[in-house]
Figure (cartoon, rainbow, N blue to C red):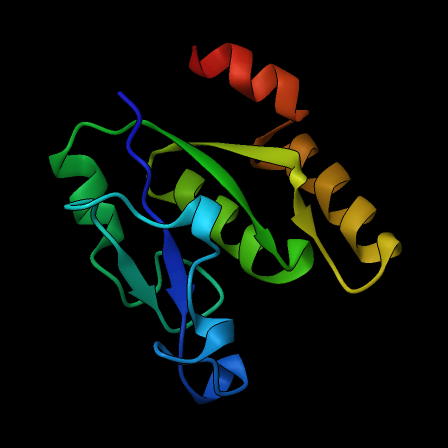
Length: 129
């Protein structure tokens, strides 16, 4: 079972990104569906200080599809924490970005070696179908 759980970062540590500001809103193509669970995160990991682990467990989720900005920060922290909470993280290569190709590539390499399945978009779509 796969459930989409959009996560947004807010607060001072996020450089002031808040709900209601353009940078704090979902792009239309990623907007949550009516009734879809949304987690408002405050730290690099989507797991830190949120109800995400409990919600995922209660809803029978075992695999997470992860993407975002930045690969070396939020993506990495969320993938590592997902594994530490007993979930299987799948990081989609084309769904991640960083400020520079060096940290991006190095973190995808390291995540794939230790913590997550780093896969191209086509493979992720095949696995999810």
